[in-house]
Amino acid sequence: MSLSESETQARLLAQALPYMQRYENKTIVVKYGGHAMGNAELGKAFASDIALLKQSGVNPIVVHGGGPQIGAMLSKMGIESKFEGGLRVTDQKTVEIVEMVLAGSINKEIVALINQTGEWAIGLCGKDGNMVFAEKAKKTVVDPDSNIERILDLGFVGEVVEVDRTLIDLLAKSEMIPVIAPVAPGRDGHTYNINADTFAGAIAGALNATRLLFLTDVPGVLDKNGQLIKELSVAEARALIKDGTISGGMIPKVETCIDAIKAGVQGVVILNGKTAHSVLLEIFTEHGAGTLIVP
Ligand SMILES: Nc1ncnc2c1ncn2[C@@H]1O[C@H](COP(=O)(O)OP(=O)(O)O)[C@@H](O)[C@H]1O
Ligand SMILES: CC(=O)N[C@@H](CCC(=O)OP(=O)(O)O)C(=O)O
Image (cartoon, rainbow, N blue to C red; front, side, top):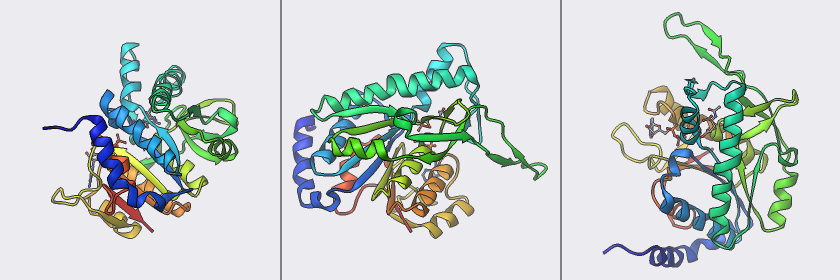
């Protein structure tokens, strides 16, 4: 017999009680990826986890993606999605749609879900309160045939160059939960589309967050036999990238984890956003739920 959502929540709460003081007054940045936004039930479970963090005295900050949702909107408008080095090639028309989908519909959907729990969420992007400034990304790739490095021109894809935490700190003091879309202005007046993982890493670094959680579509970093690795040091993570155990989209994610740790985040966790209540299972249980990457 399966449990109802309220029975599940009551059980989780009972399990969580002994661990609730662990992160009191600490900042936890949660990156909620587009693939993890699976369905309405998962969305509600995510919102109730964020609300419970807040009610337990944690300072949760949500940074969200929405890659699949941007792709769907572009396709509706007859525009093909094109990626290079894992990043969306973003021309003027595309950046307008990216901003509309990320800072518009997805951002407000997450805000509404959290507000329905009784907590107060506020939706922002890097533009609000001069929070984040970006500049054109300078990404390079090595051509596998010629071994020559070339600079990618990704259009209006940005990388974060400045984070001002004033607004985020004000919101935390006012008991509000910031929900942030990875869109930011450049000093050149353009709007930039930023990969949500790197954006979350930059925010967590600027806030010296205690934890940065990445909700993705696998249980964490898996070893060669497909088994979950519970804890990885930065050196071990680098070795797994080098020997090919970590590949594809997991490479930039783990690299972002390493950068965030170098920037002062105490621990970064990669965990399954497709499992309901994975945030609570990670934060408020003895052994956590995903892969913890530590210095
Ligand atoms: N060692 C590994 N452990 C787990 N996932 C891996 C590993 N190597 C590659 N991957 C791939 O990385 C994917 C997650 O990266 P990505 O698709 O970019 O996530 P997201 O869309 O959530 O940001 C997994 O679905 C998996 O296919
Ligand atoms: C530059 C770049 O690629 N930006 C991403 C931003 C959204 C994102 O990163 O969303 P997920 O976390 O769901 O993948 C994009 O346009 O898809």
